[in-house]
Length: 311
Image (cartoon, rainbow, N blue to C red; front, side):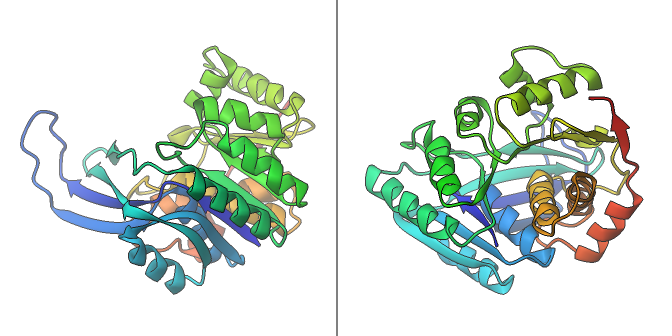
């Protein structure tokens, strides 16, 4: 069971334009509203890959039904701590000419201590029956920066492997719980390391520093430049695949789902890496309102060029 936590769900409104003009008039050629947020995206991708998947966390009265309908339709089990107010709306502007997304993300509604305690109880209960707990996404106003650390320690105590996908202070504090896997991008890893990471050797060095702190696996997503992964004993690098980009929304979330699925199936580091990057590539080639296509994920995973790096 792969359970993803969603503390700051969002309705992702993607507006496509032919060519985005900063400060000018942009005419929308298509628009979609999708129940999303990183935890929701991970759970949906895991289910699409054939894994038993769940989603827990915070949800809001206004707009929450849209999430229940999408998760139910995908066969994802869910349980939420319900809060007053409305789900935030994030606006994504997709420039077709460049294949680029410009994001305008809202902060979300504030939460109180009672709601956070309810989330802690949800994590304790679901971690006991899950193989992986994925902690991912932004935290809503009112949520302390060390909340992921608190949840990670609770899940690990229940025998569940924790995957952490966060940035800044949330990532730094979360590392203290020694998660099974983290997935920073280059910028997030640079912030953590406190230095520029301009080469593969520098990226691998910073990833190995995280392993020495107790992290089991570090996967670094590099966007169009591919990804690398290490468990401290082995390291792998891929330049990624060139695909026709339909949207980059949820690509990183799909990578997390693929990595978790690969490890859940008892696969090797390379097996999990291929499925993770393959899922991210397939997500980019798929419109955001559609579910991740598993056959395309498998094909992308097979076609990846994966090279060993010296540890």
